[in-house]
Image 1 (tube, rainbow, N blue to C red):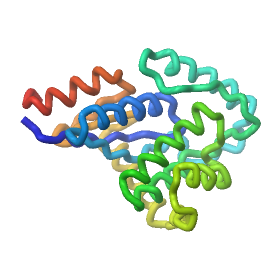
Image 2 (image 1 turned 30 degrees about the horizontal axis):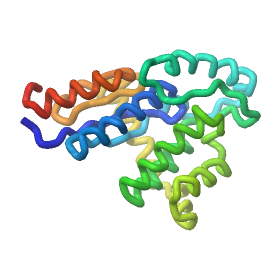
Image 3 (image 1 turned 90 degrees about the vertical axis):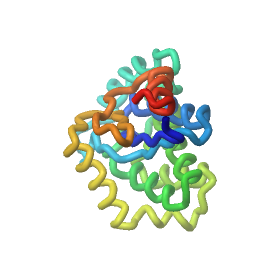
Length: 206
């Protein structure tokens, strides 16, 4: 039997399926109250800006969010109705999340949740500097600490985590690996699936 289960989750803030996985895994941490911990790591679906991507193309793409939105325990989604965007690339929100993590687990979780909800439910461009700074404040984080985002060490960490994921065979996200088991679970599983997986380890069946 295990007293606590450690999970590593690779995710991208621009991935709708990752939003569903985040909501479910956050709930799992709350429900199991200290018996499971999720470490969120970076995966870059859009590592570089794409200047050919127009707002019209992006709006059409967000119609595909209706699929994850239709799942029984889905996060809240809204097809893009904003004049913001399209988002440039995956790096900016990851840098903000890493900067928040330096302030502690509660700060990271507040920023992590705020980024996902702002993008998928509020149609805000979370790759835009002004938007990210506003979300930092909305998450209740100290304004003078936002400067951490410019630390080059954070960018190196973002890139290193992505490269590590690729090296161990992660080809898409979300991907969740249980520490002690080197095979990542690919895709956004239901809450019940995640819970049964973790409870089997806690009971000594894995």
